Length: 130
Image (tube, rainbow, N blue to C red; front, side):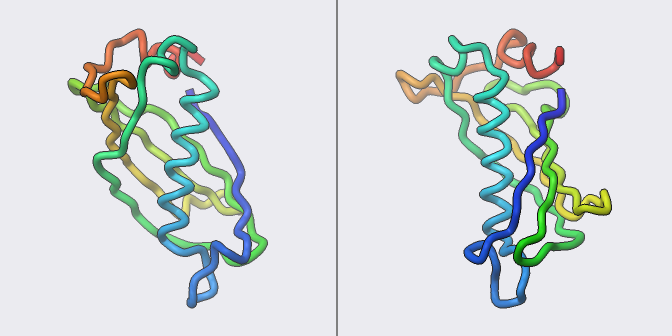
């Protein structure tokens, strides 16, 4: 299932080069993942587990300036490995070109103990069935 969200570059997102700062793109990647989890996860899983980033791989192929918008799309990519799962996030400009693409690895932890938890199929099932 692909989850989408639109972001508009505000004055605080802009760097000295006049476009969205790389740190903002990283924040938007995290915002996409969090919003997707909150929108789709089984309520019990959302209560019991929390996700933390362990790796970001980001390719920058373009940028946007103040007031310009991008559409982000995210989905779970591949199968989980132990306590980790990979997520793809792509941001497209108004012309539909992918200008930023990220592959992030997330680790799932039990909220109560803070310990790593194996990602079971039922945790990701709602993200695959829509």
